[in-house]
Every structure is written in C-alpha cells, then in structure tokens.
Length: 432
Image 1 (tube, rainbow, N blue to C red):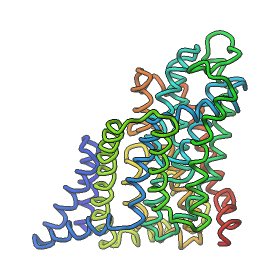
Image 2 (tube, one colour; image 1 turned 90 degrees about the vertical axis):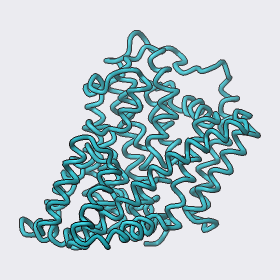
Image 3 (tube, rainbow, N blue to C red; image 1 turned 135 degrees about the vertical axis):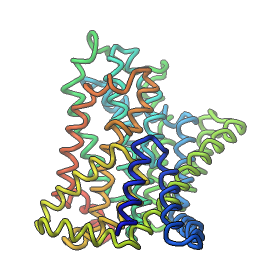
C-alpha cells in the first residue's frame, strides 16, 4: 500500500512541476519496478510493447496521416467552402461555418488537434479579417475543434475500446449523438454571442477565400464529402474494419489531393508523412508507457480500492456518475486525453460495471468529459493551438470561451444521464 501511494504522489508531483506526461509515466514505473525488484525491469519492455501490440491501434497512425493529408491537400478548404453554402448566411455565419466544418472534418481525421489546425488555420484569420474579435475567433475554433473526436472516427474512442475491450464500431456510433448535440449547442452560442464580438454589420457573403461561384464550390466539395461516407459506410457495411478504414482514408485522401485537386506533390506528401510519423510515435509512446503504469495500478488493486471507497460513501448510481464526471473534468485540465484514458479506464471500469452502466455509453461520456479538458487551462491543447494561430494569449481567450465551456458541460450531463443519446444508433444499426 505504501509503495502505490508513493508511486501516485511521485507521478502527480512530476506532472505539477512540468515534466512531460510520457516521462512521468516512465520515471514512476521504473522506480516502482526497482523498488519491487531490479529484475522486474523486463516488465517495462514487455508491458509497454504489449500495450501497443494491437491491430486496432494501427488505426491511429492511419487517421493521423489522413488528417494531415486533408489539412495540406485542399480537402479541408473545399469542405469549408461547401459548409459556407449551407450555413454561411445565418447570423454569425463564419462562426457557424467553423463549427460545422469541424464536424465534417472530424468525420475523417479522428483528431481534435488536427481539426483545430486544419479548420482553425483557415477560419481564424478569415473571422478576424471579417471583423470578429481575435479572442472570440480563437474561442470558436478551439471549442469546435474537439467535436473532431466525438464524431467518428475518433482516436480516443479507439484507445478506450482497446483498454475496455469494447467494440470500436459501437463506440464510433455512440459518439455521433453527443457530437451532433455539441454542434447544435455551439451554433446556438454563436447565434447569441456573435454581435458582441463582431465589429460592424455582417457582409452579404461573409466567407470568400476566392471568387469561386457557389455551384463550383459544391461540385469541388463532392470528393471531400464522399470521404466520410466511404470510411463509415465501409465499417458498418462490413467491407472493412475500423483499422482498415484508416488505411482507406489515407489512400483516398492522397488520390483526391494529387489527382482531383492537384494540390499535393510527391515532395509535399513525403514531408506530411514525416510529420504524421512523429505525431503517431508520440501518441503510441504515451500509450505504451501509460499501459505499464496502468498495469502497475491494477496489480496493486487500486481499482478495487477506489470502487470500495466510493461505494462506501454512496451506492446511488446518479451520485457515483456525478462524482466520476467531476473527477474527469478536473483530470482533463492537466492530463493529455490518451494518457487519461489508458490510466483511468482500468480503475473506473469496474465501478461502472458495478452500477450497471453500459461500457459503450461510458465510453461516450468519458470522451465527452475529456473534450472539455481540451479547452480548459492549464493543459487545454486545443486552446494552445488556436491561440498560436490567432496570435493571442491563452488567458485573454477565457472570457469569450466561457459560454462554450458551460454549453459543453450541459451537453456532458445530458449525455451522462440520458443514455439513449449515445446508445440509440448502436442499438438501431448494430442490434446491440
């Protein structure tokens, strides 16, 4: 017991003093193994390899590459032009375009960071050019970006599915309801807030990266719009697995970028593949070392102790879910999403099963919870990326971001206490 307490204290102390999360996992795990027995260090290798030795995890580098190809290959730009035709004329048009474009982009990339970079990189400068306050433009893009990991495919859903031994296909479907609900909530916030942060009257055509006519914009968007249909249609028709769908997304994205839009050269593709390899390596190293840390926690029976402690306070499922939500809302503010999922899933899952909650439903709740952390300082990865694009400080964005945070938490509690928001589609399409 003393050893596991020391391990947890050391882990959180390292995070607090600014040690990168991956090194915090590694240092804590190595010290724990050395305290137990120096010969146990072989476990570090075997368990870290075992954590990434998964067919489903192969989807991560594929979807990361697909997102980077979309970002650099004009696919995201053509999606934005199409979305502008749909919602650009509503009051606050550019803000709605940002939200809906992030939803479409999320249906291909599976990454919130890629969504913010790809859509925010285009929309933040455009919103600023059209008279929106810089801070508000950054807040809209940062908040909208996390819809990218609710709408399938989703890298965090894949990681949770592997750790919880739950069908990734079911989890993908479970994310659609929360994602659509979050999209609608953000559009309502945009409608109410845009006048406060926009100088002057809205222009008749707010978004115009070039003079392309509307029919041409719609036509050029068709290859981009087909991409999510191929990915999700292939998964749920049984043509290929979620992992194989990532490879299909990459091949399709490259062909469209090179042959249809002619916006990508072989040299550019080589550079993109290098960037994607680095991003994927970082994610998989975190998964590997977090897997060792999670194994150590499980070995020390921490999940049982947590479940016993909480049920000793209350056995009311509503109060337990409330406690879990508060725990994840706090955790998400300082811990990276993938790491949080790998560490906490073995701890919380027994408690979830104890209160009779569907693990697929919990997956949707967990990812929605950690989405809020992506825009809540100090971690706030989406906020950091968007702030860098908009060239403003993170703290200056907090005020315009607050309504989106409140809306996110409201949606989170709706998803938590109304299971059908997440489970309706898995039940309908997969006969769960």
